Image 1 (cartoon, one colour):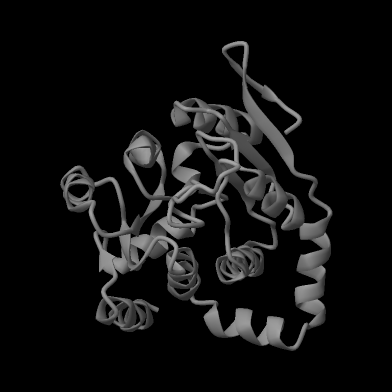
Image 2 (image 1 turned 30 degrees about the vertical axis):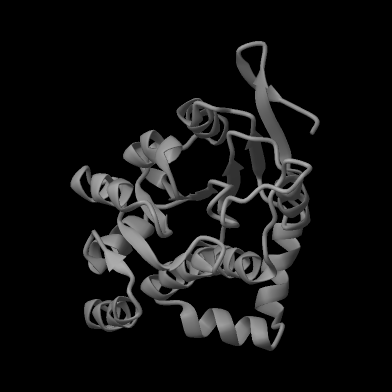
Length: 238
């Protein structure tokens, strides 16, 4: 297994991905993960806002997250807890999280560690059981505490990347930039490191009874929304 992980990591390195943590250690941490948490702006998109003040996502990244959740289900026979934590209010994040049956979606929580604390308490998790995909300064305190961290790359943030590297705040930096399917790259890397890439593809391509069983369980999840209300994080109706 170690040889397979190292061979796979070379594929991502050859494309420009940076492993700040050895791939075999990433596998070790991945085996402890029970939840996947994503920042929104700069992760699902390049951070640009439209005139309504929201930002979009793409189906390529959405497929990656679904396949990542499926790979977790294949390994553990449980649906991973999946959430978005954003400091802003993005209607697109509500639509995606509902359609894809994420466990929860946090919005307008500017100090994101408060959301992480609430999230871990809600689902009875330890921070080291959370994988976090992020992109910028406001996410770093969350990244400091999570068990597995992927930094979405972009031009113009070399000082941030240097800081993240020096402070050990990420395990992998994507080669693709935000808004250019970097989230899909992060998902494919984690699926591959976990050793389930071929199984995931074959089951999904043939829409197997195994995939249908996963999908039935996934689609039974109803997304719950949370925001800061009266200085506390509470269930909200976006």
